[in-house]
Length: 191
Image (cartoon, rainbow, N blue to C red; front, top):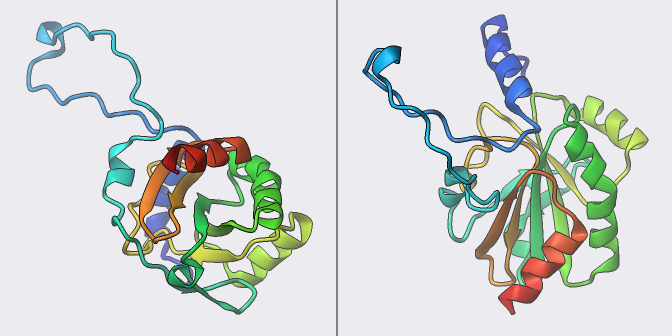
C-alpha cells in the first residue's frame, strides 16, 4: 500500500473524527429556510445491529486477502464454523478494548473463528509493531479504507463486526463495541 497524497488528509481526519461512534442518520435535507423548517420530532434510535451500511454487505460475502503475518486469509476456507469479521483500527479506543475478548473467543471456541480487518492506511511493519504490544490469537488483515473489500459495506463507524454463519451467509452485524456474550447470544438465537 502506498502513502496517499496530502489531499486525502482531510478525508482521513474526517473518518478519524467520525469513527469509534455509532453512526447517526443524517438530518434530512430541507430546501426551506431555517425559520420554516419543521421542528424535529422525537424518535427512537435505530437498533445498532440494523444500519443501512451493513444491509449492503453481500449475503454470502467473499474475502481473500493477505494477513499481516504473510499467510493467505480466505473466508470460504472457514465454512462449517461461525466467523466473526471485525473491522477495527489501531487509533480506535473501543476497538482496542474489544480485542482481548475477541482473542479469547477465537482461542476458546472451536466453532467460532475471528478475523480482524484493520480498516486504516497503515503499513504492515507498523501493524506488526502494534500487534507486538497488543497481541491477538486471530489473523489480522489490513483493509485499505480507500479500496475496502468488495463484498463488505463501507463501515460507517468503528468497530463494525459481521457474524457469518457456518454456510458462509451474513447472519448479523453489530455497529459499535461487541462482546463475546453478544456474539454467542446471536449464534444461539440462530440455531
